[in-house]
Length: 247
Image (cartoon, rainbow, N blue to C red):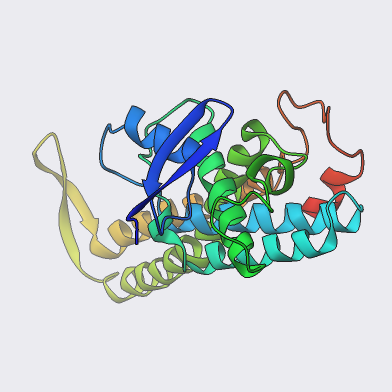
């Protein structure tokens, strides 16, 4: 059994590992950008899978993609969401400016996995990376959308709860230490008396302000560009795609 297979796209042929779900564009980018050895974090890949899953659902509802193909894409994208396919995302986080390589990495992985789910061979193009998985999308709207989603989810699920716990503890310590007098310091030397509770009260206030700023930033992060396609006009996609995919 061969340990490699040949994948082909409009730019030519590339050799990839036989069991790899990615294709020619990913292999080419892997060769071209071996910069840091740092890959994309799990929250980003989760959001990337969500974007592709909901794009396929929107295209299915609009009758733009065959239902059998769309459902296979959605199932494959869900495997990206939960982390089952992380090993098939080998690209360096430092790459072409718009993230085209990683968008295509996702398109190829999801297309090939969808082919498998339909009983087809890897690379058969029964489900096509561009014509099906990336239908109605561009790297220029997918990648910013994914960045917004990943940041919003991490802030909501992890950062804000953690800061909330920190605020609670700092508030408790501010009260507990309020009768302890110490010496404040400026310029690496003792300055004037201060209650230790006041110091912790300052910490509490700073974290509280940071929480407020993050909550306000969430409003902007929840504005998603998916459906804007290459330059934000929505050209080459269905006029209802953006509303459906983001709903």
